Image 1 (cartoon, helix red, strand yellow):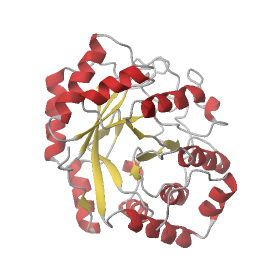
Image 2 (image 1 turned 60 degrees about the vertical axis):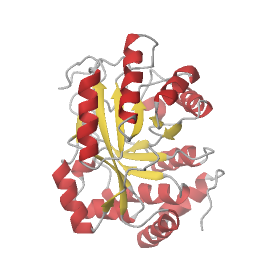
Image 3 (image 1 turned 180 degrees about the vertical axis):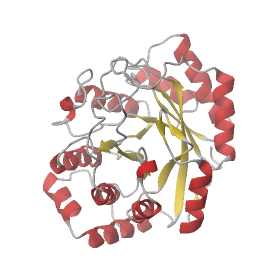
Length: 321
């Protein structure tokens, strides 16, 4: 059985990524079956609980206040609305409910208090609970964990070398510090990146290295495919080749054998065949529901049709939750 490593070199990652495609897929699927049940997919639901007006300048994000996009600013949702959405997600087969707020960082006060209530309420439903609220300190992370938080999402996005071409309002070190704070608080980590930002293959290898050399590995690794949103600086970015995207997923599976590798943003642009390849390459988690924060996502019934075609099953909700 493949054991996790935390000392991968860029050359080793490049050798994995660049091997013949079918060999890569075979290796990734072999590693996957050593650690997970074949054909079992975790379904997560992502809800934007506070939308738009973010002060950051992430070049891919329609929620930035700096760009003119179709995203309308919306205040923090009320507790009851969020709990109703969580109940709907659970009834539709999601085992994890994720809540995202367009904040640069978590600030103590009434809004954060309400998020803590949301986490507690969703946790009591027996679901895994995840948040993505921007930068967070250890004390805040511990408070969320005590309320029932399972995991926190904080992506690295891209390589340290390319990062400054995409974001200038937050440093790579800021992201690493937030990850460190979460680990110190004992919170599981959901940490991945985005491909198709215009990065080089070397940048892709470095992103994977930064993820795979964390100890422990992130429990969840979302691999996002850029959704080029009109009004953002990356609106005209050329789409990444699908097989390069699949190579990224397969390499992530080999590097992080015990992590959930999540097929995330950009799934609406993938055919059924491309999604099937992604699952063969080791992806074993998806976001379900018709929207990911503010970008489109396949509808519930479309996912069910695909699951039926491929003989896939939803990962059951853990009784320990």
